Image (cartoon, rainbow over all chains, first blue to last red; front, top):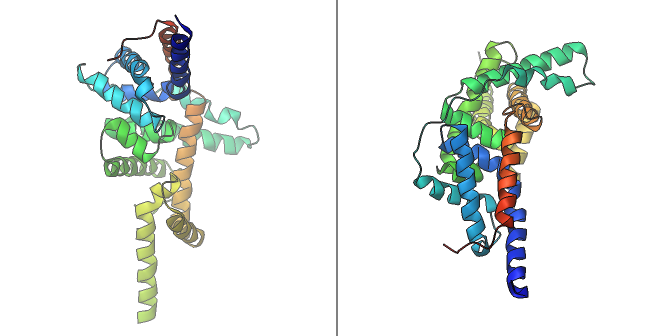
Length: 185
Length: 100
């Protein structure tokens, strides 16, 4: 390979490392919203990575997540759409939540653990579309606009699903005696 | 019997709670402009009910973020991401791709 060609490859790899690789976790979670099985989600991310690598020279560096989500949607066009499985309700997930809170009293730690368990249970019981939005925003840290781009829905839909989801989670906490009563939406 | 002024004050308070309720989630997600952030923050400071509600929602967000940070929401993620990372590395190690 001539020096210009080598530089070309190095630039591509650098851009890929900078814009794509840090988003692997988010891409996996978004892929799960488009597929049924974990294996399919990983395959979809791999397809997305290949397309992103092929097209990275045309990417201007602005809004990498939106760019990647568009690529992923296009990659998914040729795949069979299936429903996503229920969220994993791992009882061990929330059990150790309070462990790291070493500065808490035993009572506070127990209350925090009960709260975390109730949140995890409420999340697992949410309808799929609501759970997806909560995961993208509260777990992956996406903005409303990014989540809308990932799910290919309007921002208003993201907000609506998110608000209803959190209301449901909160209602369950209140029912479990872990949140204040009140009628405000 | 409540005076007109009391009823009006109560109405204003209720309207404010409703207004804040509509944008509370966006406030918690840092999706509001500065003016509306100030409006919500001021209301939460003075309204016990909305303040407690906001605290609960904030704790929910915190619990989810905490669980995610510790790999407790999808514990299998780390292995999957490592596999994808290796795949990404293999792409970079390959010959330059054909443009599509």
